[in-house]
Length: 270
Image (cartoon, rainbow, N blue to C red):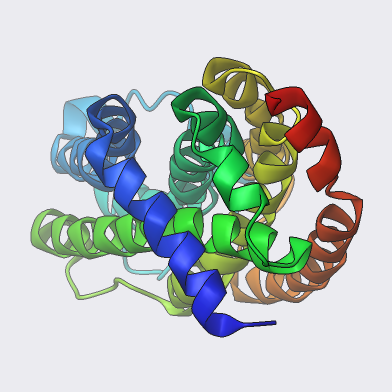
């Protein structure tokens, strides 16, 4: 594959996204919620004995967390802050790259159809793999960068507001480093590849975004599993997820590139 042609496609798509103000607004809402609002609320919850005594939503998780995971010297507020910010929020953080990817990637082919710029791209001497990979990279870069930026904000809030409650520096731990720097890129790549495949068959950006919501279901299942105490999303689980999803990434990308029908798109445009 020609790296220069792939980068050209990716840069062109990325510039279109940055110029689209309607697409930029949703990109900020989800990261602000999961990187700032939720961790700040949890840290403030741990500071208040009254609020801590009436925890809603964390009961099942705290009751089923394995022995030895939490430091033994924490009080109730420290347990809430430590457990919620280091374990409970970890799978929820994966919603950021998937949501960002769904906004950006769903406008990939469909956006070019609406702007009437896709036909020229389809006639260029790029292979289907180069074309699909360029589209994926154009969405992968903002999804990963925004998630990493959100992680920096989350880390600051967790330490500034959470350290006084927990009584020590506790964040980030190994699980979060694996999630942010390994799991986020591979899960974003998978989501974007599937969305690009859907986008190539959709006639409107809204239609592609509606179908792309299905990509959220596995992540939501992981969130529910942790919230109900069915599993603990720790470092071993995160590493297993990285390896499994990376293998799926390769298979899905090759399948999407192989089944991409350039001629059908050209026929529809003409």
